[in-house]
Image (cartoon, rainbow, N blue to C red):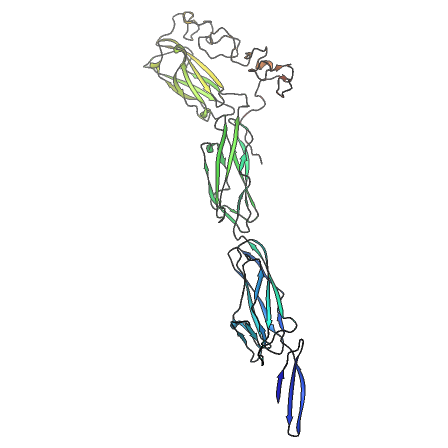
Length: 489
């Protein structure tokens, strides 16, 4: 019996010549052609991190009746996507004695009928986003006079597809904004603001701590949340509270740098900026608690002043405190350091720096805005005036303008008591009862700016937006009492 194999477009005809003892006849029979099938149209690789590799399988199968030839399998994708294809002959599976063979020319593979071969689709991406690929599988036929493999006559080229979502695979640090501005803060007060640190990646972000650079950074208190080991999940934010307490009356700037395990941009910085103000009117306060008025001091006995310094809006330890001698043209004889607690404290006065006779020790305290408070203590060095009638150490011959009041003597701190305490010819000068700008109104009369003679109660309001006409009476600074603390969220 002879067989001749033909390959028309859609069917394979097999002519069989049969011979027998009685003669011979012929029989024309048909066989199914080569037929390439894929087990799936799509190979879904899911989520893949940059730098990692994901694989999937697309299985080729010859469902025809003759050997199938397969040409070069190619991937049509974005050049940067990173898709690949490959196979292992050891993974092939065939029915009966069928086999899968591999070649290095135009035909790459042959699959006998009933054979299947898994094709591995791989992806090692370098860019994030959605990526796609078309996997083209051409079939080829043998051109020899006696072919050994055939192309699929219906689907000369079969095509599958692959898709993946490429992720960063790491946390991505983002500090919102390059500048964190605080609202103006009165000296001694505290202002809170909030810094947002975001993880824009698709994996957890671990912070490695932070650092601050700048002379003003002591004014900024960094809250908890940036310590090494803090973890921020993908798409989440860490909200960090930062407090500003001004050091002095000026702008404060501090560079805050945050570190993380983000391999691309893991170190980022932001500038903290804040301005202090002196809007609160109250300044410092100082009192002399001892020794007694008119105390006679000697070098052998020494002299310790007992003081208390307070401030509603500033830490007393930040204030400047000086002790001066009235008899020595108000030259400084000692400096003092008030404690933060506002408790009483002592200052040793070097008696050797004082001249014999009546003297007044003037204590001057300046806050960070330059506002001053003073207190005084009249003393007698070695001996007082013999004509001192009120016990303040000063007599009329030395300049006491009221020797019947121990609250009146040269260089005394002026008090708002209707007396000329310092014997300079003016009563209550420097107090809220004194008209500093000579516009006819003092702070007690409702003048809200006693350094501007155009600002007083009843003044005409100008077109420049400044407040000159005052509608409410009262001493300045009474709107805010105590130390304010709080967070602006």
